[in-house]
Image (cartoon, rainbow, N blue to C red):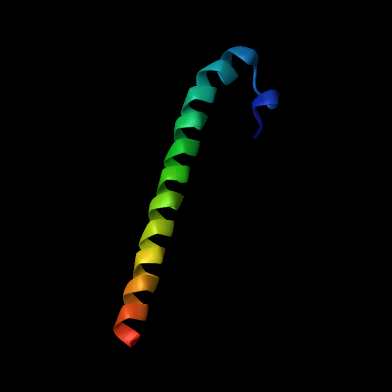
Length: 48
């Protein structure tokens, strides 16, 4: 489902929610990347 397939009035209401969802996904991916990096550093430190 794309925004262009929705009626203009409805897409105007939905767009802010989509932006928020995209920001949440980006924040989660960033946090997950940081946790993965920390886990790698810790595992390298333990293996030494």
